[in-house]
Length: 278
Ligand code: SF4
Image 1 (cartoon, helix red, strand yellow):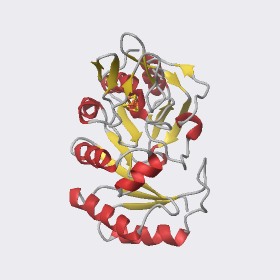
Image 2: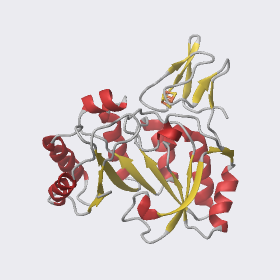
Image 3: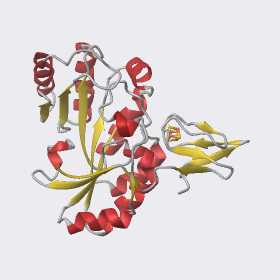
Image 4: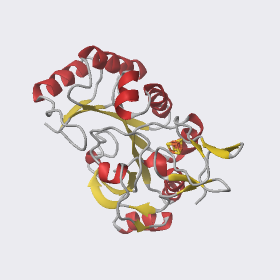
């Protein structure tokens, strides 16, 4: 499948899907590992390649205030445009797992067959499956299903605007409220994620997840983050999640008291705060 949001620049192609803006020469692959240039443009390598299919409670996404009590047909592919060393799903985000081929029609008809009211694009980063997610979400909407993305929000404005009309809810990771942390720890940047949150809130149900990674945040930073969310809307649900060592990050788990303390701090500003993994 040809990738969208690609422009030709001299002897190479510029991918404009996410803020990395990778410049790809024939044979090279972007930072996400799933968009590769050939002589004619860029190909989406993970189009229709599904690494995981599950039926999950919607609260597991996590979404607390969108279709509560329902189950959702959840699919993941592979690839990610950030590189967090504590990645909870690195086997499909940073590596190429075994996959099976599915069409958008397969996904939608399976969800309907199981009597499920929604489809979730989750597990790895759905932004890097842009073409498949867009096509499947459109078909899902035509068939009366709701659509959900669980995402890092690291996407450029134009492709985001193309997705928003067919997405009903998102859980967006807000990993930190410091540019340096986004840059040095996750290989991205904060500003585009803030923009995604601001724009998405106007168009669909948005809930935020912050994983409290040991050694990554300060209290002042978290206070600023919470106040910024509240300045958009006090009704944005915030999920504060406890970290456990994973992948290449070996700091001890977040103390439970810290999760509870930040949860209380958030409750002073936001109406819906949830603490998880404790
Ligand atoms: S989607 Fe992938 S190839 Fe495109 S700019 Fe982002 S990381 Fe680079």
